[in-house]
Image 1: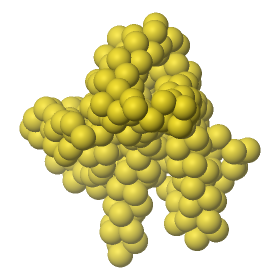
Image 2: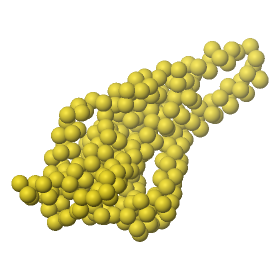
Image 3: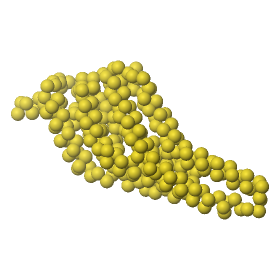
Image 4: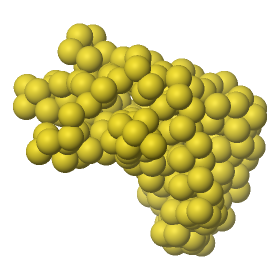
Length: 265
């Protein structure tokens, strides 16, 4: 009984970090995943981490323990948020494509988040989830979460890193890089649609009798769908590159929280 009483505060800290990660992280944070499953898998993973790591730790129950709980929740949210940004880069790229093709008028409800999402963005996001699960990316994500205790033990200096601005600077750089990646993903189709608009503009000037609004909409739709089918085989390689950058960014986040910031992601 005494062992349970002594170990419960440490287990609670581990449970807070892991469940906070599941609240934000892709796949696990989906609305299709029941809350009981999230709590259950968080409990069992926390138990595994506690038995392999927490048994050797000790903590004093004082006023600082509340700060420790808040610190562990922030760490879990940060890890999940960094992975979430890279998945949202694909939806942002799809939104840029939708605006150029004309699909932006037909948004759909994303079953994972419960909010409206662009048509192509939702399609690419679902496809990215399939590739991620086929690559056992969720296993690597869980392994990275469990290994985070080797980088960031329960007694860490997260608040000092936050006060110094290292983590804020890192998050801004990751956000800008993910937005740049979304622009690069959408660039081939966006450029093709821009050239199509340019050609239609020249057509309007040279042959005003043609109604560009009647011709342009179906032309852009057909050309956009053709380019999407043409680019489909390269999406798997693109997603693998995104996942590689995502895990590298997580490693850099761990290093910054540990107090040894690296170069930009």
